[in-house]
Length: 251
Image (spheres, rainbow, N blue to C red):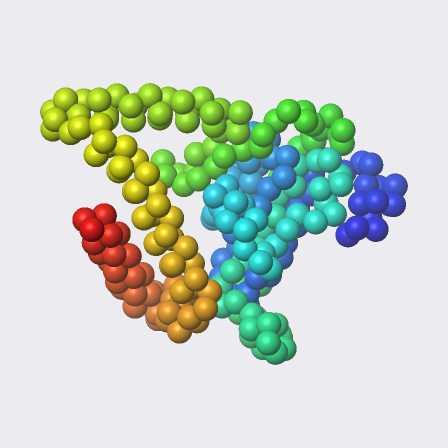
């Protein structure tokens, strides 16, 4: 991949790059990372493979996670890059576990079909040549909303929505203070304490997930016979986390 991006003459003719990785031996294909993606790229992904989910939040999560897939040398092409991966039943890096016997046929089938649909869709589009992508673009923000499906917009709008959210928050705080007669010292303490509590609990949850594998061995939503148990298991974990947050907040 690096040799192609740096030396091959065809690299100068690439208008879009699709990368596929395996982070496990099962699970559906997901869009886990993007680079230089514009509106047409995200629209093409949603049109060609509506069953392949993804969220721009995962890109930020994977940037902090060790061993997570990276765009790699494809970033040298200066074109939009979409990176897909399956994450079910992660490999045990202590031994040789990425064997053909462990790979689920449904995962291979879904990956192959998605590759073909994406290649057919983008192969029939007129892609912008390398070097013509706007360097000022901040990529795309995309996520799934219930009943609405996947929503995406330019990253340039992030600060606009952030300012709007900040103004709404300030207005809600002012109205709440007038109604409840809360004093400013108590409000300032809450402003600093609540994020600290949330961050501390989040770091604790992350450490438990990384260092106590027994907690997530029961979580296997890809297996149909375990789907209901996996949801109950997830609901139980969410209930425990919510209870801990409420207790910490009250304290």
